[in-house]
Amino acid sequence: LAYSHENKVTIAKAGAIPPLVKLLFDGSVVAKENAAGALANLAGNSDNKVTIAKAGAIPPFVALLTSGTAKAKEKAAAALRKLAVNSDNQLAIVRAGAILPLVGLLTSGSAKAKAKSAGALSNLAANSD
Image (cartoon, one colour):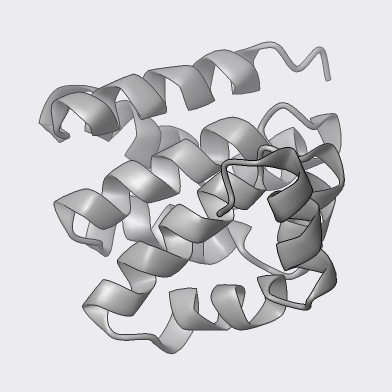
């Protein structure tokens, strides 16, 4: 559902973002993977990028980069890649300590994690601050 722009807006307006972020903190392994994936998809919408960051998703995404399953690492890197398009989010991502885990995934992650990490680092490097 979250691949469609309209669905991304509808899902966010229905209030899904805060409970998805909560799952990143205290969900099961599978719940964390699925929540990270859902939030990564929802982050394809500009308004959702801000809402997701304000809901506190950046620190648990960074944590998943090192402590999550391979799938969770991929999804967290994908979410950070999308969130890092927003300049305010770029600063928050750097301050949350994402650089070293993203760099680490470039050598230790799955092929998807490597690609998503490279994309996140590319977006973070575009920040002029």
